[in-house]
Amino acid sequence: MYTVDFVEFPSKTASASGRFFTEAFGWTATPYGPDYADVAGPGINLGFQADPEEQPSAPLVTIRTDDLEQARRDVEDAGGVVTVEPFTFPGGRRFHFREPGGCELAVWCSAE
View 1 (cartoon, rainbow, N blue to C red):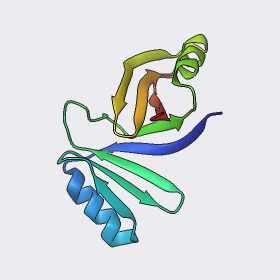
View 2 (tube, one colour):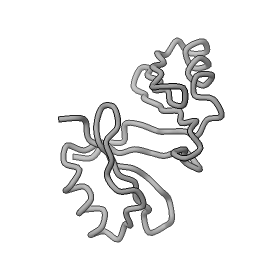
View 3 (cartoon, rainbow, N blue to C red):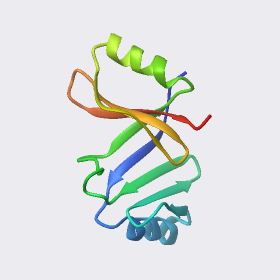
View 4 (spheres, rainbow, N blue to C red):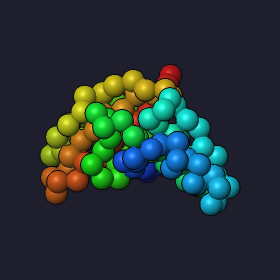
């Protein structure tokens, strides 16, 4: 099963982005170092990446799965191209891909 459940945004300052959503909407911001913040509200999870080396150029829609290896096979079999090999981050693993129309997305699974 695949579910869109996270969007990651480029940010000039992740802590300021987190503070904004906390103050404006009452959502919870969780910092992961100086360059990353997760923001959670009712039915929404966002990430803000300020590290220029890891920052997406546009909002990055992230799809959740229970089987990252199968998701990669499905992406490639459908004509997608993996742009970032699977990597581990706090909470799980993910990879990025470009679909045939040119949009970059990611697929992730939680830590097992």
